[in-house]
Structures are given as C-alpha cells and as structure tokens.
Image (cartoon, rainbow, N blue to C red; front, side, top):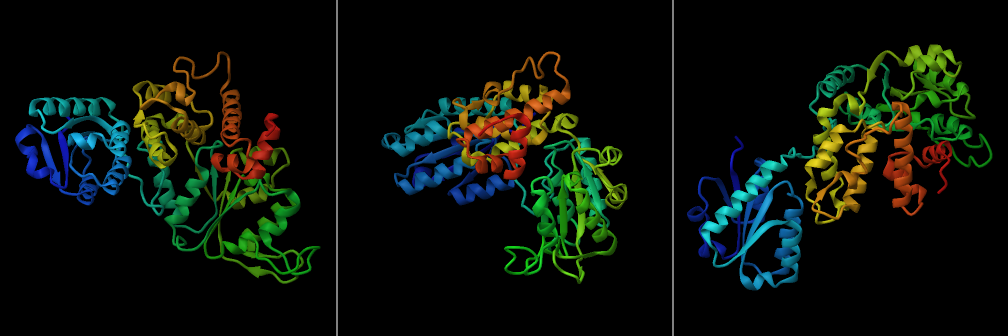
Length: 444
C-alpha cells in the first residue's frame, strides 16, 4: 500500500487562519513555513500530494511559487487562497498550470479532505517513476534492467585499466555516453575527454584535425596547431564511428596505439602523447575487415576490451524511467500545462520497438513537450500508433531507417530548416547530418 504522505507549505499569515492538523486526518503530514524548507523536504523525501496555504499578494512571491511548482510536477498540488488573491492574474495562471484543485477561505474541512484524497488517488493512478537528475560526474546511464546493470558492471571493470576499448552498439543506443562513463570512473577523470566523430570530418582535413600541423605545413597554416589527439593528453580520446576512418589514417592511428607517438603534418620529430583510446562503431568491424575497408591489425589493437551497448528494445523495462528522465531533462522547452505522460502514452512507449533507440525516444519526447496541448502527453503527441508499432511487412532494419528519416524530418521542420540547430537537436555534427540527409534524399 502506498504511504499517504502530504507536504503542507504555509506562506505568510495563513498559519493563524488555518491549522492543517485539525483538518487533515490519516495522513503522514510534513509542514513547512517557506519554499526553501519545502525544497529541502522534497529533496529528502517524495510527497505525492502537496497542500499550499497562501495569503501573499506579492508578485515576486507568486513568481517564486510558480518556479517551485514547475520543478516539482511529479506531485499533485492543492491550493488554499484568499478570495481577493484568486483575482490576481499571476495567481490564476499558476492555478491553471500547476494545481490539481484549489479552495478559498473560509474552507470547508470535509470538502478539503475529499479533495486531498482525490489528489492522492490520482497520484497513485499516474504512478510515474520519481526521477532525481544526477550530477554530471555520475554514471548517467538511466535504467534498472539487467542489461543496463550488466553494462554498468563492465564499465567499472574496464575503467580501472588503460587498455583500448572498442564499443559496439546500434546507432542512437548511447555509445558516447558509455565512453564518457568509462572516462569519469577512471584515474583520468580530471583530464580531458575528447570526442571525435570520424565520419563527420572531411577526408581532406581529418589528418590535420587529429594529428595537428606545423607552421607552413600547407597553405593557410600560419601557426602550429595541436591536434585532437594531443588535446586528449593525460585523458581519453573517444573515436566515434572509427570504421569511417580512411585507410591511410588507420595506419597512423595504429602507430599511435603501438608507440604512443604522433607526427604533426609537416613535422619530422615525433611527439609523445599519453591518451587512452576508446573507439566505437555501429557496424561490426570484422565485416569491414573482410570487405577491405578496415585494417585487421588496427582492429586487434582496438578490440582489447570489447563492450556492447544494449539496444533499447532489449531493455524495455527501462522505458518508463527513461521517459520521465528525458521529460525532466527537457522540461524547460515544454508547454507549461503538461504535467506528464498519459497511461496510453506509456503503453505505446512500451509497445514500440524503438528502431532509432534512445536518440529516437529523446526526439519524440522533445517534440511532444512542445506540441502537446493537453495536461498529459498522448500517443498521438509522440507520433506512436499503439496498435501498429511497425508497419505491416516491415523488417526491423527498414523500421530503423524509417525512424532515422522521420527524426531528421521532424528536427528540420522544428528548426525551420536550420541545419545547425537540427544537428544540435539530433546530437550529431552538421557534417553527419548533411551525410544522413543525402543518404535519405532529404533537402533542407
């Protein structure tokens, strides 16, 4: 049975007009006299229902209350106000956006008890996981499934070593997040983490970008420049989509892995660099070796500590938790009336196969936060059809391609065809987005 916890917040003179313990019965009641106390109480313990006892007419106080409620939307709030305060436009807007119900002085104790019970029942029906966003230094791999728990265990083991790591995972599954977690749990955590998308840098520039160059090495090289490998000194170099590296660059990377030295473009003296290499790919590099597109000796050098990131369909039990996590992460963009996900929306999320993985989940939730018009996000807001998660006769790979294409179109439309902004929303570089647009025949 869910504990009937209630947080009572009293602002200004309301306490002398109303004693909550005389009205509210059969509740585990916590009372606070300010919003700062209320924040501490909510941080220490989650309260499904909150009671606001308000008699302030100061706009700054109402604005502070608005901000407080905006940050604690997982609870159902009931307000008690003076009649004149109800006429205040800021107060009316706050009630419409945040409150389950409201009462005016003098109150009817029986009606208030009934309202609080109804609010508690509604909170129990919603039953959405309570999320507290961790600090950036924590392992931000959200989920409680066996698959993600196994990945966390592997990360902790791998983080203790200095050997190269090769991460495999489908596009959008969280390979860079995994690499960052390895870095943050290693002895190199205080040093730089340099992420390089090997498929996003033009072939003519990747040599100088990775290895740097000397002054006068080529036209326009007015001064020497450190490359990205040097920038990762004492830290971690993450090579995303390493399979996209040109073959001639693969030889240089192999030399760095073997000897720990690099040569800037135009330089004759090698430079010693201590950087751990973590590589990732959404294709199996052994197949690329067979096709002649990837060096076998480089694969052996990279694949010392292999990791696999599970696809989202392999950890569907994490979907409610992930959905609420991203809801809170991007709530600054949302329609103020939206308070969470409807039961139908959560069912649609669980039923869908997510061919675009976590990246697709993020894109659909961000779109719903902006476009939804009701208090709760629906399957329609997410663009999910509960009855047909895949189109008839559509293979899983075809569904992944469709999801990728749809995500690009949604972000381009939402950005007004601004490629830079759409790339930022998708979590890829501009060059990668241009390549994907060409692949799918999409024009900005």
